Amino acid sequence: HEAKVRRGVAPQKLRKALDKLFPSNGTSENANVRAMVTTAFQALLRGREVCSADGKSFNGELDLARGDIAALLEDRVVFFMRPAKNMRHTKGKTVPIVIGAGGELIDAHAEISEMLRLDPVARSAAADTPMFRRADGGAFTVAQLRDIVKALMRAVGEPEDEFGAHSLRIGGATALFAAGADPVHIKTMGRWSSDCWRLYV
Image 1: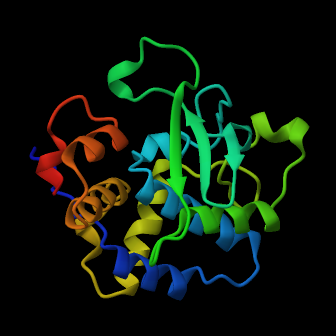
Image 2: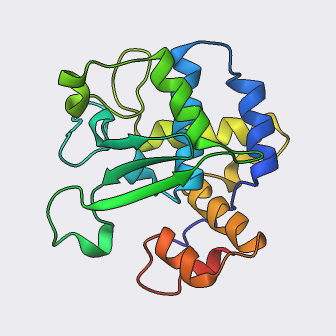
């Protein structure tokens, strides 16, 4: 059967939906969701790159962990992740992701900072703790991220069946393109080895 076409999430609607469903109210649960969603959007992450496969088999060597945050500076956050699907022959988390601070609508740097403040983890446990975690401490799954994106879009009047976990990656790439980013930069940021990103934007 034919795969569903997914729409990208617009930054304006994403911000409005996050503030409506997961407000910055000082809870670690909301902080984790906000940090996860905005990071996936700004870093152009695939669902499986930001979440674990099933939530029960979190693997700190593959899945994003708190210990992967290499730097949280005033102007940027840096973390390392495993190579993209087209580079799996390399081992370990060798791909640096850099997100600048100060986004007007979406600011993953600020959301990660808030998450770490509200939901701290001991350094000794960071490598085995999901970067973004549910209230029970487990990693979010791709299916849960998909449900969150659908709920967010439903909250702002969008047809939820047109959105999924990949909508954050599509929306992030589209926002970069609309802002005038160089195609080479979009391709590099999204870790695309081909020009398939053009299908999104």
